[in-house]
Length: 576
Image 1 (cartoon, rainbow, N blue to C red):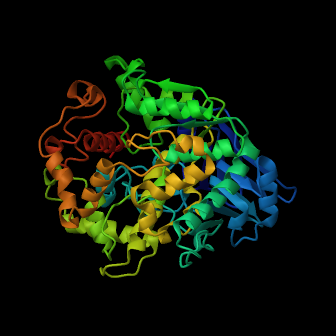
Image 2 (image 1 turned 45 degrees about the vertical axis):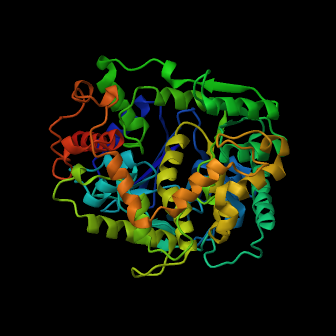
Image 3 (image 1 turned 90 degrees about the vertical axis):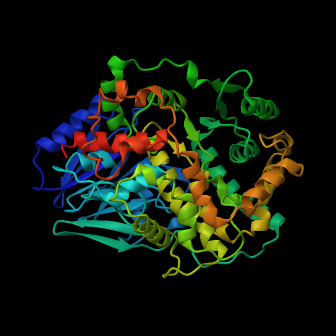
């Protein structure tokens, strides 16, 4: 994904953006355009695949550019931007005409406008002085002189892989609120509410499972026709033993596409690879098996340079943390070579992901079950479990527009939290990182697909029944292949599968948050790149920036330790 950076004139020494330009260019994100107008300077950087952002400009001085991938009226590129610029009235986008995962930077009538996709998966970061705006966290971070940790944001990232809501884990950096457009003028900044891309209070015409399957298949088919029209056979998608990747493949085949297929795993003895082979054979397509364990790993001498590069490449942080074996960057570059990558993330909107009782629940119960992945031994006395839960609950309530107060809400509100909370923040971070390498498509993050999924009866979502039916309607031969769950999608789930899902459903809500704590009550082995011999080459192991918030020696989850080390490294690099 291309990067944009808007800086208010006369607010920042030229040396700071100059250093940022040098760092981005060093890792392969070159400066491709610079414009100054209406009191602001715009810097545009290309993506890792060498593609510069699309750009249109009129003789009157109006302009438009897009990062990520953006379609308007079924078109992409310069023509899509021309139509958008002509149609834009300074107040709203016509969401019926927009598709993709994008940020839009427009200048019209002497004003700058920042807009995002309908689900607000695209994030815009800005400093608290509202003088720097960018789709890159790292770009805004580069302009912060003395970054300070934001306590709640640090805990949310460490425990869940992302901060939620408008906060980040840096006090001086915020995210533009969902559902808003940012207007930049020479005398100020306005965050104004936009028309909703996702109607909130609609009801489904039918709750019959067969009718629901047909409804969402029709929406997906219309969307996939746009994909095929724009990208043809340049599509590349992972295939696994589950539902989501198979539904994507079924829709691609039905639309006449022949995508490249790949899977991560081992050539021999990997059950998921065996299932993927069967599915690929049924589709009549070759399958590439990528075994990451056979790729070359870092040496200790490369460690410091590698993490410094990761800091820029992954935009300051990624959900798993910046420390890795050295395979991730090379793999992302390789899998996006001259192709448009497709992902089945958030396909859980068609299944009963939470497996919570079908009764009213408070959002704080949802936070306890799924967003409290920490052990009390991980934190210091600075941590308040109640304050943490309250802040998470409020961020969740804001994301799904749930009623105020701590009362219990109907089950449909819980269903909204998956796409509009987890999807909008955690999955969106993965999406935005992937977009830096090449265009990527997450069909189940499109606003039109997400719409109304919280009204689908849970009886349709149980045991994957709805999604299995959608696959069978689109590609019966693929549905007839077995799955990693032990059954084909044309037959009823096995009794073992139904028993396991039933046991999860019956597990008391009050006990669920303790599962994680029991699992990580004792130390776990660390991957080599998190051992003191390696980590000490990059980070001060006394953890001076994070020591107040975290009990470093008590963190027994390697993933949490990675993210806390990422925070420590980030703040040490920023001179905190």
